[in-house]
Image (cartoon, rainbow, N blue to C red; front, side):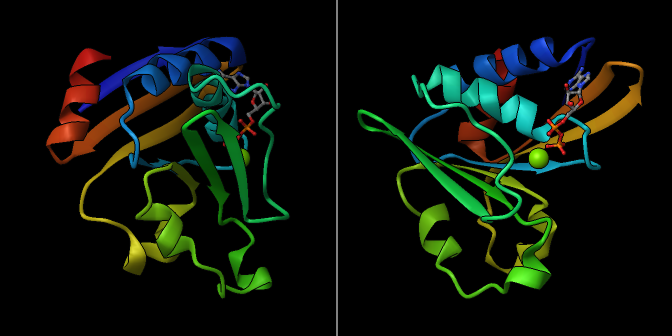
Length: 148
Ligand code: ADP
Ligand code: MG
């Protein structure tokens, strides 16, 4: 487990960038935290690390957005509104592919989550401060956690 603190959205994006540089194809990140805790802001940084030029914004109304840059693929999933939208799409196939999956509100699909992943928990400490905790499940994610 590793704990980080950021004092602005920019710092959270930069932390995402640092994480993004360490990710292997097929990685799965589970982002937990209340609305506006900083999950999407963090994901923007992952996209930057993968060379994705398109702006990454909240996919709340679409459940998932796909981004690509050369061989890098990023699947940004936001399950906040899953109950309303229904769950009849192949999320499991994306999670098990060689793209990088970043999933907000992952507990809504706990039955299809892989055994190994990097859990990232966001806590709003007030003003612009956030606590961001990394917990690795599995060797390849322990490596990421170690180098943060
Ligand atoms: P989530 O995806 O968790 O709902 P967002 O990343 O969409 O959250 O929104 C976070 C909001 O909080 C943004 O408006 C961002 O500018 C603001 N913010 C303020 N301080 C921070 C910080 N330290 N880290 C991340 N976001 C911050
Ligand atoms: Mg979000």
